[in-house]
Image 1 (cartoon, rainbow, N blue to C red):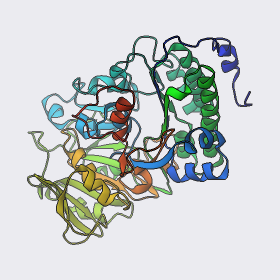
Image 2: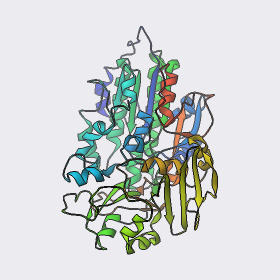
Image 3: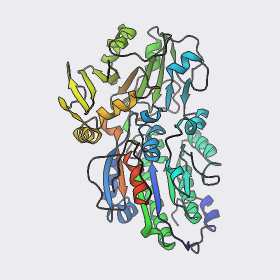
Image 4: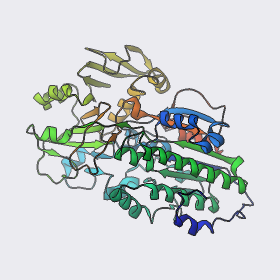
Amino acid sequence: MHPEQSSYFRRFESLCHPKSVFALKRPLVLIYLVDGARPDVMRELVDSGDLPNIRREIVEPGTFRIATSCFPSTTGPAYLPFLTGCFPGTINIPGIRWLDKAAYHRKRWARESFRSYCGYEAAYFNADIPKERPTLHELFDRPFNIFSMITRGVPQGHDLTARVKSGLYLRAHLRHKWEPVDHASHQHLMLGLDQDPEFIFAVFPGVDAYSHLNHPRHEEVLTAYRFVDFSVGQVVEKLKRLGRWDDTLLLLTSDHGLSATHRHFDLALFLQKRGMKTLFYPLVWKKNPAASVMISGNAMGHVYCLNGKSGAALQGEELPRALNSVWEELLQREEVDFVAWRGNGQSYEIAASRGRATIIRHPQGLTYHPRTGDPFGLGELAAPMNLQEALAATFHSEYPDALVQIEQLFACSRAGDLAVSAKVGYDLREAYEWPEHHSSHGSLHREHMMVPLLYNQTGWDERPARTTDVFNTVLKWSGKPTLENTDGQSLC
């Protein structure tokens, strides 16, 4: 037994009988969501022999590749691509925090006016997903969930950590000790294998939590990676005993990357100190604010201008005029990488201290046009590109999938008038951030957008991949009908 296994696991080990071999075996899809795992760190650990089980059971017989996440690249919204096949904007959930301008102007204190999934409002996440967008839990007969906040469609008793999550997460947050949470994820995963599962979505939050507390390559972070490897070894061994391993698709991936943070820039306080009364969490009960800032993943923030009475989004040059002198100062801030907003018609504007560019939606696809500079460093992309061509054209850049991600974000009615993305090494929130974050994510930069995508299969489509592709890949591999109204394709 691994020395890190807790007495909790030993108490329940007796329930996991190898005799529970099912007379009627069904294919099993198991997704390990290693929150915050960086593909470069994982590759280094695999190559060095630090992750022997992942290497032996997944990489050597299967595939190690990378994929793009979504914007904002943050926990919660970045689970949506896996479980619904859709970008956050497609589902009208533009971040871990958001404000709905139209709803806010109708009734400021209504439940639909603003949201933070970091607190008690996390309970609203499932209801906020449109009913016409099914989750994988709703498409499998026997789905199980471990620590994910998206549980719609999970049958009663199949959300294996529902009763323990709040207590475990609170203690981990207060004590800065996340090993018990990862251990509980593994323990419930082992128990879940005895319940004839068809689909399991298991979250391991330790890598993300210890990266925020330290930095992405801290020894506590690497230990969290190693525990995931231990879990994979135990799970595969058990599946082999149960006679199910040959019919199992095991995917190991992440929702976002991370980068070390050296300096904090509080975007909300920046506006507040310049005379703009600003609504932001946790100070949301403000009368007649001029603006709102909603941060997602610390390195991305929505800015909403609330002076107007209609609740309509600002477009084109309306936004620089509304922010007035604050506009140029914001662009010149050392911490700000770029800002983006809706242009006139089917276009989106990108501005930074290094210049301005425009993304245009044509009937045939998206184009990118540097104007006074090239904020994304892509050069002129004048030929309209579909979703896959736009990904291929940007996949190896510093802003992978930038064109599609900007469009999907602003297609969302709850997105801000302005999206602000921080430079690597900086974040956009300092006030009320406890404990202090030493790593950040949420931005459109490569270090936040690229995630590992490992699976125990070969021969799949080798084109550049998104996390939205996992949804239909899982359905197709399982012999189920794929869905057309998603933002991804099948890889297998």
